[in-house]
Image (cartoon, rainbow, N blue to C red; front, top):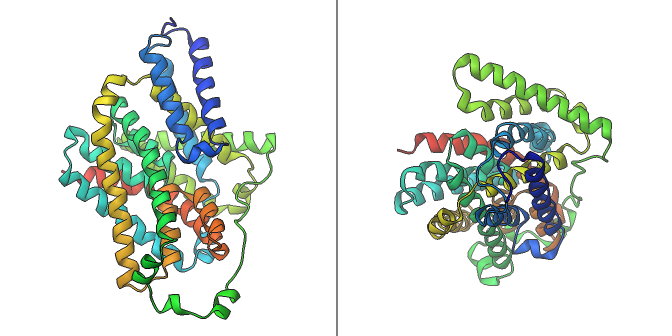
Length: 378
């Protein structure tokens, strides 16, 4: 009904899908049906029924420009000094969680046949389950994954992340699991626990101000432009996302106060990512999605299951505090926001801040881990 050159109508459709996904993410339904999945599937249904086109230059433009622009916006609060100072021992456990994800991805790669793009999928899921959905997107672009495979991987990855979170929450309530993971640190007295630092989640995102938001856009554009010049001059254009990540983190830690004041940058970055989800969904052939979704779910589910199993074994044999292990794994699998909510709901208020900071640290390192793994696997 809409041709590929009707950019206004296509933009309207993409915006509607984004609005739907953002709305879903404000409702309890998000626990079972995350916004990105709703956006991708809804856009895919409309394009495969002929209402909007399967192919359009607009989709390519979104991928080429909005994704790189979103990466800095999502990393402007990645102050490593604050993280190392306040995350404490949980950060070391988070690094174990990242390693558990990598091991799970390598095992899945060799045990489950995903065809020619198996290494790329392993890299994308490594990025996603060390960082978050934006890292899945960034790694998929960096390793040049096909749009069809990328759409399937990202769509399937969302529900698996939620199942991983539900599994961690369930395990945290089971006495037998606590007994299995019991350590000397778990035996500290109630007085010691009461004396632990009780803190709320840090204020990562100051109030929205238009001057700050557009300032963030200008800074992000600057980083992207410099990264493009560097990668083009060095002949490494495919690694532009990694250079963008590196320049952003370096800039943030040189002038943390300046970047801390750019309110609204994270939300704007997420908005750009949701637009990308709509574009990639609209350009996906649903028959290919259905054909590969079950195998992709098995692949991703194996990685998360391996991650959780390895972390439980680490808690047991390295004598780690079980609640810290759960928070570190949650920060890797579902990111900072859901981790803060889980820590609060379980009464682990002293772990809210470390959980959030570990999730942000995951954003920083996930792109490098995912791309490196995809490049190293045969």
